[in-house]
Image 1: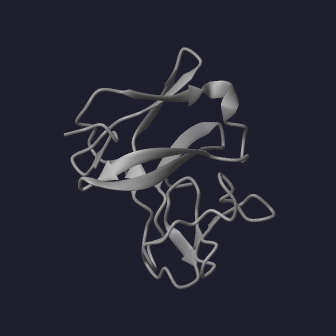
Image 2: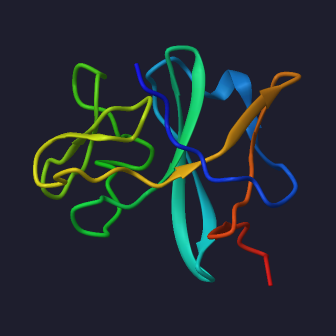
Length: 132
């Protein structure tokens, strides 16, 4: 499966959660970021043993996608679904696979898992909520 295209990390690792908090294809951890200096939400999931994170914005219409807080996956837990228009994304890559998202892709956020903890990395476009 193709992996997400991660932006080049440009800041220090930001602690997200303990590794055990992300169950395989389970609920996501939702967290706050700044995208282009504007408040936004992001989410992290464990997919095929790896942690992936994306901005919580549909490629079709820039709206938050979760059905309920932290619930992004379809009933079979195969795809990330937008709760508004049903756009479907491949979880490992963020690539649109069905619905009105066309050739779109979710905005990936670089992550790292080490010593039983999960971290995310700021990029040029996505910063921690306390960034200047």
